Image: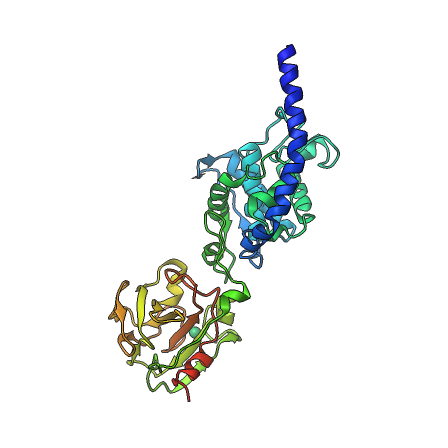
Length: 379
Ligand SMILES: [Zn+2]
């Protein structure tokens, strides 16, 4: 009896000392965590998907009522017009607090904590019924999250910690991956939007690619001239940047903000390597990448190490494979109209150095036209 009281007091004293330590740590880490921008940066323009009820599924070890509760959390986020990133944070939090169960008991740190988010009876989280209601408790969590300045730019567990005030700010980190899996599995795609493409932005670890302006620095292009990727092309049929939905195309945000340039020679022509490059992907696109048709990603061998993409080639026409290094002017395949394309053309795209070349680069692209001009490909 006496000993446990002493232990309890010691723990309370320790906890008092730990609060300032955590605050100081957050202050010290502020710069770095903001720079990593893990949470909302890549998902912030992604509208929250609609949640589906999925009682029969099992996802990441969760099933039945747990997944119903996850769907309620997702719905609460979309009702508040929050992002996909917020939905994932909400589910991540509730896994860490309650394993997605509406629990009617607290713990040593908070004996009065209740529900999916273990919200306490201190007036901040509503009535007992509110705290035990999945949608209401999630709504109150998201409202508190919105008051955390810059929550979108914090590392996910840190953002959650600002709301939940767990003793360990990293407590929620292990629940990131299951939360992403659950939200992905319970999301119902909306017409015309490519849901998988949104999830490409958020890795299971919650990392986002670097899309800061610094990442778009091209560097010195050097003096050597390039080959044209489509020699003798008759027209640039669509320039880089925002455009109207091309007639007959299936339009989502990627199509409306054109990620490359379209060159056309009316079919049958060879697509060439514009400069020495290493092929990193050469395949017929599957899933959402089927919009690319047969496509190639390649990395420039010399500095600055640009990353190129070539889309809509004729299926089966590829003359290169991943791992090949080819010289400028090497035929890669035949100009076609495979994938989300309304006529024979080559879609040619350039991403700056530092962009990973093993996956589509649409997030970091730059306008290829000035680069091709400076390399003598356009007059
Ligand atoms: Zn295009």
